[in-house]
Length: 204
Ligand SMILES: N[C@@H](CCC(=O)N[C@@H](CS)C(=O)NCC(=O)O)C(=O)O
Image (tube, rainbow, N blue to C red; front, side, top):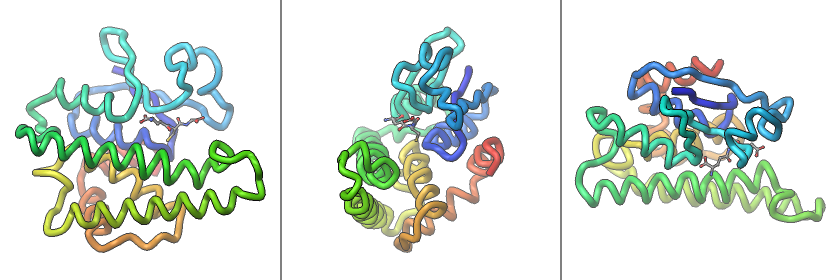
């Protein structure tokens, strides 16, 4: 199994899951500094030019954070990374999709790539500010979901790895104050040996 990543990106949330599972995998760095994601051979594996990408032992490739992590968790049911009951399963997807689809793709994307939202450079500062607003609202919602709980759903799930990477970015790249339950969740994630191995594996 090969895991394609770029340090400092959302792929860390897949590496956390790979480390939770604990089976051997090969980590392949995609050299974003030289725009390797847009050139052969990477673009032949992933025409989306994004990480994460998982190349399975049968040669098939999987893209998209949620799809990769669902496949990993469903292939390793003994690790219990997906709640077994229908409500827990749905709540896990609800939280994971919100972290990836809204906090990352709507919040952080506006901040990092304002040009993808508006061409006029004079408007970029406003787009970035809106990105941070979306992010702050996202943390507020996650904070309420975490009230009285250590993990987003049940006894730890894939959703926690998604919240982890958007929180990690926020602590590293912004002055946004995290609400208390999100702070505690981030501390809990950092205490997990799998998270420590994932970070170390990518040079952090
Ligand atoms: N929706 C995708 C998002 C993946 C994504 O945005 N990856 C970023 C890094 S966090 C990337 O590879 N960007 C490279 C580029 O846009 O050039 C997913 O869930 O996997």
